Each structure stands twice: as structure tokens, then as C-alpha cells.
Image 1 (tube, rainbow, N blue to C red):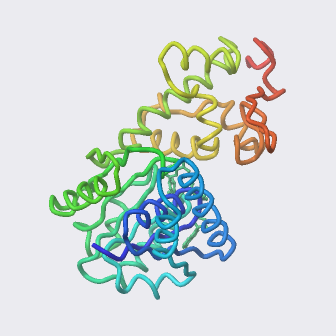
Image 2: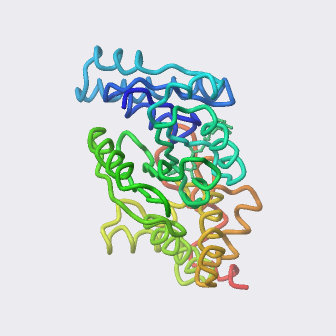
Amino acid sequence: MKNIVVVGAGTMGNGIAHVFAMNGYSVSLVDISDKALERAMATISKNLDRMVNKEKITEADKAAALANITISTDLKDVVDDADLVVEAATENIDLKLKIFRQIDEVAPENAILATNTSSISITKIASVTKRPDKVIGMHFMNPVPVMKLVEVIRGYATSDEVTSIIMEMSKKLGKVPTEVNDYPGFIANRILMPMINEAIYSLYESVAGVEEIDTVMKLGMAHPMGPLQLADFIGLDVCLSILKVLQDGFGNPKYAPCPLLVNMVTAGYLGRKSGEGFYKYQKGSKDLVVSSMFKKNDTSLVG
Ligand code: NAD
């Protein structure tokens, strides 16, 4: 395992490329957008600077990591000598199936094809390739250079050998891999998203306000971040789409997304990335300010 191709240079792709490059792998980072690639390299450089400032790595380590990454907009061009492909493109099933068909055509027969999907079935993605035994979920957490967990998801046909290669490789990256089977939401989102949805329902039903809900979970359960703040961080559109995957996959109404979440996404209140969700985000400020849409104990939200 030497040549790693990371497909998608967004939030997750740049973090994944960073971690592989830091650990001596040769990384080709691919995106359809030149801008995304430029942004990714700037982010990786900035994040490596932060590690230099904290004296976790040296300037020479930073230079070596950056030298391990090349960027490209031509997937077919870089995949032909890949040992491992980690797909981290936009969370859209049709797009992922198209990318996996393309990769499967060109990648060497022995290459392992991993996806960082948060919720799409690994078995479904594997089914469009001629190597379902070599397709696996490698679910890194955001921010990738900081978070220790890699949820390693076995599709229905993923082989033992491929699973153990990816488990070992994750350890080499300094991560803690955890093996799970391929069912909707895997483990992380199957448990996290119903909790976030319940927090949103509690707000919707005016059981408590935004700050109160987050404070209970932060101080009461020792969570570093309350569920509403976490939902803003993840992106409310992402939370909604994962809840729909759970609802469709299990056919169980307990996963139905709260109507307040649906309204917020429809109105473009997506959390941090759009500047406002449950909280309002101002550039340059780290203060957590509740969105003016949610006044304290506002009962007008009740239907
Ligand atoms: P993002 O929107 O930040 O980045 C996606 C990138 O994919 C964009 O730069 C886009 O240009 C690129 N892309 C789209 N089509 C492409 C194609 N055909 N070929 C190459 N690149 C293409 O998304 P993200 O948050 O980095 O999420 C990526 C994946 O990681 C998704 O599957 C998501 O579910 C998963 N994930 C996200 C998080 C998170 O917190 N953001 C956490 C875990 C897993």
C-alpha cells in the first residue's frame, strides 16, 4: 500500500489527504473543481502550520507531507496505479455509483476501493463494481486530523482480508478503527442522528430553548458539544439526508425527521456553513449566539 487516491477535496477529502500524507503515503487528491483543490491545499497547509506551532511536527515534516500530495482533476489519470482509493465526494448516491463504476474500470485489479460515505449502503456501492469483495467503508470523522475514530464498514461481500488490511492501515494512520456491518447509518449515525432529531423535537415542542437543550447534554452527559450545536457543525442538510436514509432503510417512523429540521433546510438555514442554524455565526467570532429565530422558551413554535 503506497499510492492512495482521495476522490473529492472538500471538508473530508482534504483531511483524509492530510492524514495519509503525514504518514508517508503518496496521495493523489482529485476533484472536479480546481477551486476545491486550491482550497484543499491551502487548508492542509494551514492545518499543518497549526501542528508546527503546537510543536507536534517540525517544518521539515510539514514540507514532507505537502510534497507527498499531488492534485488532479482527472480521475482516470491517477487511479491506474492506485493501491487504495478513498472516495469522499458529495453525499449523493447516483454520483457515488458513477464514480465507483469509473474507478472500477481503471484501477488495478487488486486495488481496494473505500468510501467515506456517512450513510449510503456499502453493499449498494459495491454492487456496481466487479470487485465487491474489495469495496469497504472507511468512515473518518470531522475534523479528520483530530478525530481518532475510523468506522470500518463491511459490505455484504467485503472479504476478511480486505477488512483486516483497512483495520491495520487505519492504525498506521494513528486512528482507532472499529469494525461494523453495513446497515443504515452504520453505528455512528444510527445512534447520533436520532439523538439530534430528538433534541430538535424538544425545541419544536418548546420543552426547552436552544441553550438549555445543549447545556443539559453538555453538562449532564459530558458531551463536548450540545446536539444542536453539533447539528449546525455537521450541516442541517446532511442531518436531514441521513435521517431520511434511516427512515427509508428501516421503514420505521421513529426516524422521521422533525418538521422543524425540514423547514430550516428548505429555508437555507444549514448551520455553520450557511452562517445560521440553531446558532448564528459571525466571521472572526467564536461566541455562540442563539439564532434570533429561537427566542428563550418561545411557545409559538408549537404547531
Ligand atoms: P464537501 O461538499 O465538503 O466536498 C465534496 C467534494 O466532492 C467537493 O469538493 C466536490 O467538488 C467534490 N466532487 C463532487 N463530484 C465529484 C466527482 N465526480 N469527482 C471528484 N470530486 C467530486 O463534502 P464533505 O463534507 O467533505 O463530504 C464528503 C463525504 O464524506 C460524503 O460522503 C459525506 O457523507 C462524508 N462525511 C462527511 C462528514 C462531515 O462532517 N462533513 C463526516 C463524515 C463523512
